[in-house]
Amino acid sequence: MSTTPPLVHFPDGTVRPLIAGPTSLPAPLPAGDRPLLLLDLDGVLLPFAARPDDIEHRLRGELSLRFRPDTPRLLRELGRDFDLVWATMWEHRANTVVAPLLGLPPLPVISFDDRVPAHRTLKLPAVRRQVGDRALAWIDDSLGADAHAWPSIVRRPHCCSTSSRPTASSRVTPRSSRRSPAAS
Image 1: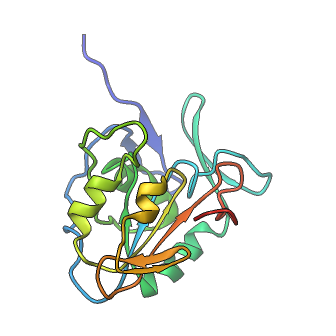
Image 2 (image 1 turned 60 degrees about the vertical axis):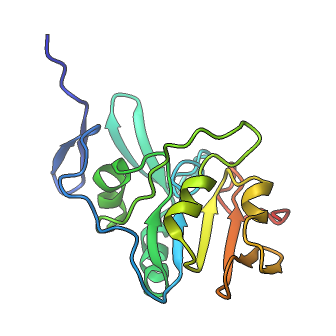
């Protein structure tokens, strides 16, 4: 008995398998002087709390993705100053499912395969290993104290670095998908 993966129907009429891997992997994390912007999806770009003006894409059955109407524009604007990188548990599926909905090209992806104690930020070991000393901003709703404390040379609220380059992390509240004023 063969099982076919669920299909995603895009607004342009394209249909792709939901669980398919990328047809071509994006380039590794880009080298350069521009800072990286590490992007999470669930609870951040794809908020858990729906608003009436959200754009919703039904993938299959009851499964749908929604995002704020200004998200594609904001990402394009951020892409002028940052190298955008997926830092999401969607990993490469972010490029095959979500990027086309947001009007983004395939982006570099940080892969997460580490075993991390429950009180630690799950993504931190892979991020540290894969970004090196690049300056970065990290937008995620699951950053723990260890992620905020990671950069050690320059320390300012929400902005730190392991090198002379500034790095920022931002905690996003699941209800609002906006930066929490209490983020540290």
